[in-house]
Amino acid sequence: MRHSVLVLQITLLSLLAGCATLPEKAIITKKHVDRAIEIEETFAHNSAEFAPAGESWFEIKHGSSNVLIVAPHATRPTREGKLRFPDGGTGSLAVMLAELTDSTVIYTTYASPSDPNYYDDNDFKRALAQLIETEQPRLVLDIHASHWYRPYDVDFGTMNGASIRGNRWIVTSLMSYLQQEGMSNFSMDYFAATAHQTVTKFVTAMGTPCIQLEINSNYTGHQYDSETVRPQMFAQALQGLVRFVEYVKQNK
Image (tube, rainbow, N blue to C red):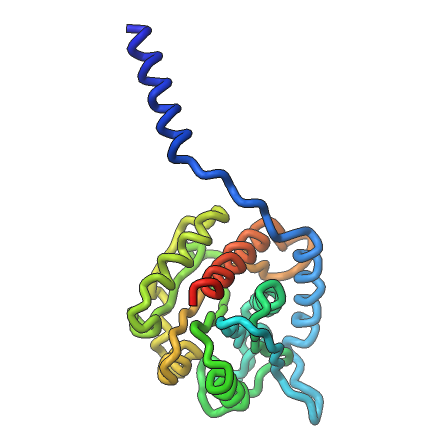
């Protein structure tokens, strides 16, 4: 009996050894997270302030990859005449993702006079349209944050499948890369990006695949300070997204 158990144990260990793959080296460093915290402090400082006269309320940084990154709620948006809350941490996440993957990113820098995820008739959407026309990205990542009470790590908004335009690999690959970083609870179309004039709806109408990422605020850091930020979780989300974008870049 003991011999049979021993043989079974050896067999199972052999199978596991044959199937297991070695982990990849981490790519996100402490310096990356420290920089993200510094960037977010600027967003927080300007979040409720409208841009000074002559200055834009959003910024574009150009890259060379085939992925375009959008953070329309990095600062507080104006919706129906009132300033709403920002998606804390999404600005720094988007900027760091763009820097690490050499991707173009567009994001708000001051309080937006017109919510880019609620209205189409604003300068942000016009700039976004021009970016899509000139750069012709393969994919647009529309980055948002969800309340930390939400049961998921990430909700994928796809307009019930319409925004990914038949490219199921976008969702499955993104899930796989995020799972490698310890994110395991996913949702699809809890926020489908179909209500109002969302960025994802706007991009989809232009013929470009787009996915709205509603990332739980536990991963983005609602406020960047020693009491509330969770640096490891931010690093995990950033690393998963970086690896996904690199995958998209390499598989044209």
